[in-house]
Length: 164
Image 1 (cartoon, rainbow, N blue to C red):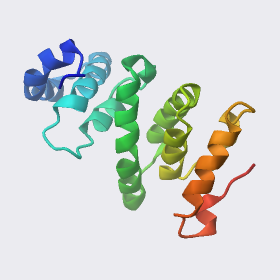
Image 2 (cartoon, rainbow, N blue to C red):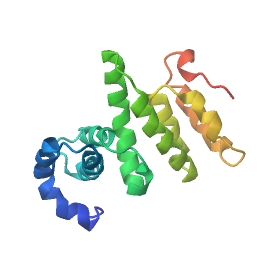
Image 3 (cartoon, rainbow, N blue to C red):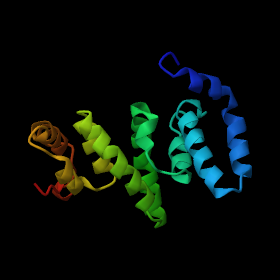
């Protein structure tokens, strides 16, 4: 809790109440804005260690400009996206919302020299070919080195389809 911003520390004890209030809301505009805030607080306040509450509230929110909430928030979402993506595929549900989030997260990771996190996220959502758009002469060596490392963990060559 030492690296958690003070506003989140203040809101942490109020998280259960925030969830209750959220469930009673009916105004769609307010729900979207409030879901964004609840998602951010869920990042540090969720009772379960492996909970995906932050992602679920984010998906109920506006899903616009999520990068403004900070890098740790994006990393938290990225960690939760894989499980939700698999769950939706198993149920036959759409993954379009998840892909919208990924499209916002990947450029931020790439811009901050976090190519491994970007590659991992794209592997989780089976969109590795999207990496082409973000690979430049400045980062291709780091991207290729990480992909090479990942390839030894690939169970099948089809899993590592790369359109370079």
